[in-house]
Length: 71
Image (cartoon, rainbow, N blue to C red):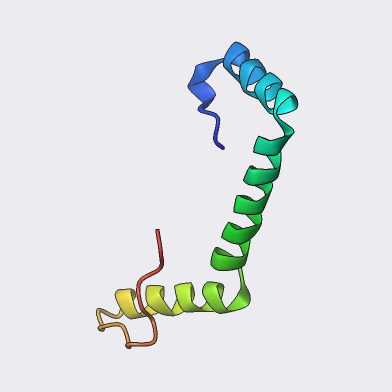
């Protein structure tokens, strides 16, 4: 869940009240956040991202093992 900074404090209050009223949503968001962290912030993912960057900077094609990241 994201909160646009331009929405104002009242919008944030509404979102927080909704989460307090629906702990099942909190659990779902927690699980999604943990999965995202495992996917994008493991050491393997971080080093692959650096390798992709270096290949791009050097204008070289990516090796097959560095397939595109999931969205």
